[in-house]
Image (cartoon, rainbow, N blue to C red; front, side, top):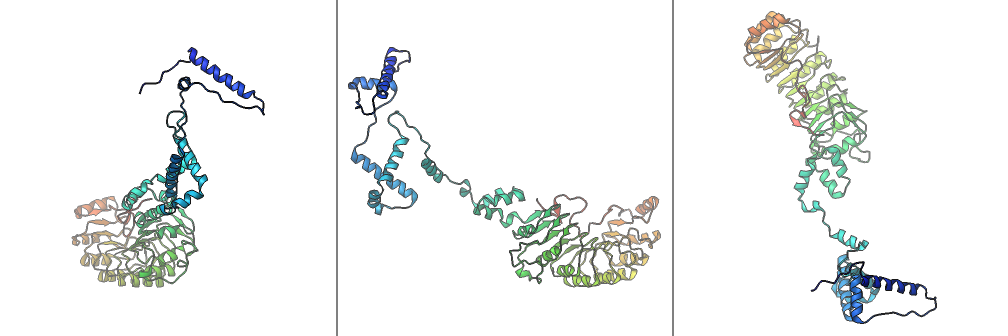
Length: 470
């Protein structure tokens, strides 16, 4: 097909054409309101040349039969897209919706205009709506496993925001696999927040130095009132197994409510928390408990200690440092926990005696780590009994002033001993002499005890060796 002849804007033909158009507009605009209007035209060759100059063409209106068939076809496509009609009632729908067909035909003609000689896209709202319905959500292409794999890289607060996007995203964002280990340390948890997080299937939770407001569960959940009878393990909805609440502040009965519904606990740290008889009884109901840290806690009574040791028979690590235990409470510990391997009774001062140590040696033969620091009543008799009956790896007797330095040679009988802590008893020269006498043992290498503690010396992102994420 030969290309169209182009004319410059300075050519005579172009000027004549433009002048003719202006004159025709003037005549049309100056006609009186009641005057008769006439159309003008040229012969066919001049008309075609004139249209070529303006880069336009004649609009060819289709025949009636063609228009009807195209309208019917367009109507079928439009109605099928909306899911409202089928081929069976096509005739009835065509006869009742003439105006609809006209709009659809106009829409089709507007997308491909024959006057300008090329296709032109028109931004109609209906066209946009049709295109939007055909767009696919990229997440619908991915499998559930892939979406969860993406969500695993998001922090917890971002997951909570994602859960508000849609119901499908809420299912993914609250999936149990994304909430197994949660770190909520150093935060203030408003009422109901902690409970909503726990119900997502949390197994490992760190609340160190946090403040938990009451109630911990939503008031609308009738199954979680603040004070309820302790539920059975099989009926317990919470899956919490590891809880670090070191230096955590609980309002009213929040801690009691949390422990009542956490029957699956394996490791628990309530370091520096305020306890009560009810709380100790709730701890005693956790029969699977292995590690318990109650260092520097207040409110431990004899009745509470009896309930704890009678229920937690599987304890292997127990830290009761500086809890102001009485003699009877200490005897409850040493007589009823035969599976202990690590025990910290430091800070008992005058309440821990040689008699209690002798019973401890007889009833807890599996001990490997023992801390009796600041027990000023025990003597070399206790050290001799320990050396003969236990295979300890670590022994701490710091500031046990009733044990004379000459008695430390008894430690040579402990073949498995690796570390010995004697802070405050020997001066620098005495420590050097003891190191020479015990060459295979580390003297004063650990300043603080790590028995049953979730974090050893510095938090490295793990509690009891399990990684927690914000």
